[in-house]
Image 1 (cartoon, rainbow, N blue to C red):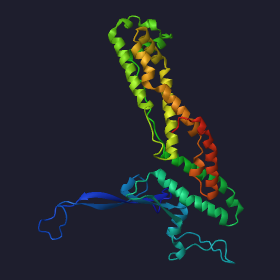
Image 2 (image 1 turned 135 degrees about the vertical axis):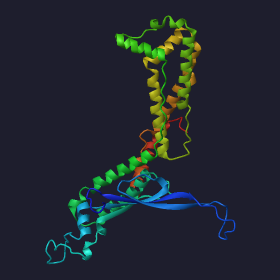
Image 3 (image 1 turned 180 degrees about the vertical axis):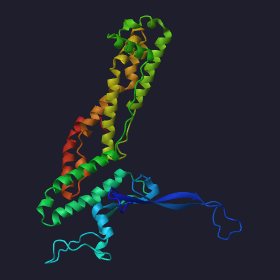
Image 4 (image 1 turned 120 degrees about the horizontal axis):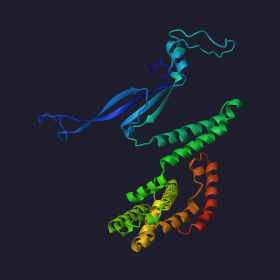
Length: 350
C-alpha cells in the first residue's frame, strides 16, 4: 500500500518495548539465576501509515517520500533519468529493469521521531531538529551554496521564521499554567438575576427583604463568601523560587499570576457577587465582609506581581535563546543588560 499509493506520504516503523514476566524456572535448572521470577523485555515491530505518540516506550523512524509520484516511478523502474554529461539529451530514455538508476532509496527521507528510554516531548524533538539541523543547514547554504540568487532570496526570511518557531516551541515547553478559579454564586442569587432579566429589570436589595430575616439564608451566604476567600488564597499564596528552573519559566509564572489575579478581580466585580456582599453588610455581618479583603490577600498579591513585572515583562530573553552565532549571543546579552536597568522599578523582586 505504501509503495503503490501516492496518497501515503510516510510510513512509521516503531520498535516498542513490551514488559513480560518470565515463567518460573525449575528449582533444578542449572541456568536459573537470581529470583524465581524476573522481568525481561520483549519488542514489537509495527509499521503504520499514521503516526501515534508512544512516548519513551518505543523508538520510531519515519520514512518519507520526497515526491510520491517520482518515488513510485523509481520503484517500478519507469523513471526518466536525467543525464547531465556533455552532449547528452535533456532526458535519457526510460529506465529499464536492472538499471542502477532504478533504485528508489534516493527518493526517500528518513528521520527519527521517537527514541526509546528518552522522555522527550514533541516540542523538544522539534527544537533539536530546528536548532541542530535546519539552522546550520541554512547557514551553510547561505554562505557556501551555489551562486543561485533565485534560491537564496528567501533564506533570510526562512531563517527568521525558524527562529520564531523555535521560540514558540520553547515557550510551549516551558509554559507555567496557573490554575484559574471560579467563584460559585449562591443558587438563590442566580435565580433572582435570571428572573429579573426575564422581567427586564435590575435586581435590588429590596427583593430580598424577607430573606434578610432568615438566619439560615444569611449563614448560607456567609459560608459562600468564606469559600471564595479560600479559593482566592490558592492563587494569592502561590510562590516560586527564582533560583530554580529557567528564566523563561520565571517570566511565564509571573505573567500567569497576573492573568489569574486579574481574572479573580473581574469575578469580584460581577453584580451577583456585589449583591451578596451588600446583603451581608445590610444584615450587619461585618465580620464576613470586612475581613474578606485582608483574608484573601488579593490587593498585596496584585501589587507584588505588578512590581515584579516592571522587570520581567517584555524581558528580552528570546533573542538569546534562539541565537546561533557569537554575534547574535553578544547582541542579545547587550540588550538584556540594557533592560536590567528597569530593576530599580522592581524593588520587591528578590
